[in-house]
Image (cartoon, rainbow, N blue to C red; front, side):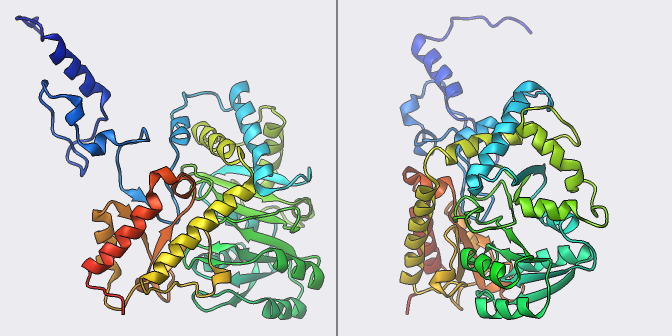
Length: 438
């Protein structure tokens, strides 16, 4: 290429050119495209959407669905960690620390408790439970509170469990008296409960449930789907005598999707060891993974299948942030944000799918739409306001409601204004769809 001739740009022009490289770079042909700026323009004239940033992330619609959630900058930056050996000393130390931090998150100090971090979605936790703790033909009582408890029941059946479902209508959960009755009629190997069913926003109470199970059927394992509850709802693993909690990285924990995270009690691990038949899974087999997790936590390299170093680094960062302050403070902040959102919903004249305030989750809200407003109208309207909610997924009422997720950094960092912006967008969007409060 021939060398450019002519006088070099004057100093102000050169500074302007440099400043353009320091400004955020946006992909072309997207809602956030910025026209190429002439080299003489001052950076003070850049649009506010570029300069009004507390985050290093490009401007984007605020994601307020019940997972994945908005992620903190430091967590995302951890995902860009350079490539390293999954059995090298640096990564082994990080993985070991991450497993140890999970014990604090779940509130277990029992050395017999066993944490697992596997590559996969939260659903992999169901397979971990069904293929290791239950043998074909054994009875399991599934407490049904929505779409995801139905899915857990289906998973158990795939592995041969004899499943009894105790189902509640949409927006409700099985109550203790009927659970006690069911437990009294048959000996169950395990009982499963979805702590927060993401399809309905129904919160199932765990402390009293566990006490009931230990009283009525003390040999029954208590297994919790905590995908939409861990890190935004309290879980006292030891204090409540739980046997298993499975969750995922992308919800209240605040780490990108791709990790199945779980904790099992010493009693659950003994049940696994006492199986009469081999585990019904290969990748999800505790036989293959338990010693790997134990070695990693002891800072010893070990191998069964390759983990994701980048996701583990991100999880390590997320857990470090979570544990930097008391868990009770985190739960209180989630409850306060939830109360504010639910009051705003009521002030709009709308009802929640979970009608009982004692059974409403603190990390999400499922909102019935007015009869005059369609899901297919309000969700695109909100998207135009750069707010993303989720549609309904409960099979019986899917088109009648929307879901507002409020977990993690969106509620813990009030400077972001995510909650207030979403409430205003919902109010304006409903009005633009023709809704007026009666």
